[in-house]
Image (tube, rainbow, N blue to C red):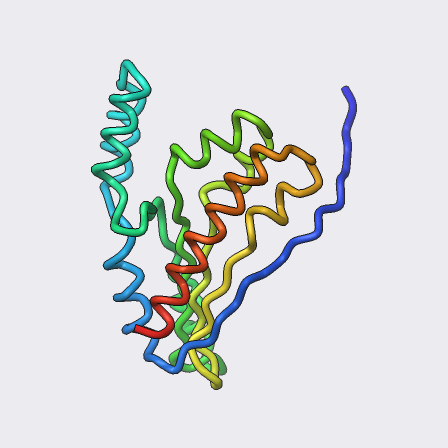
Length: 167
């Protein structure tokens, strides 16, 4: 048994919106699919072909080509302590299994990073939307094919965040 530790540099994309937290979240929800994950995963497991899988995922994603896997309302936890007042903070885990598959075919460790996290955090200067770029997470693996898929995913997520921040 051999253990390895690798250091990975991560680029974080962040944008600050003057819109309300609720407006930003609503805009994101309009663009990402929000399927019932349990039934969808059972259907994808039962899919017999790549085409059947693609059809299932195509029905589950939203206009952005992405879907929500799970959300964590971090603000709900923060608000339990009085000094955080009415703080709003939401972590969305979003992605597309077909995009993940394309990266993982070339770099299996891509499965550690996909689906991706988007953080929506209300602060005094506005609503911050943050995302760790997949291309930076995969750069150290040196695989051009996986890196191209990751750059395409980054562009998709960043366009989604820009649109939600300025809607």
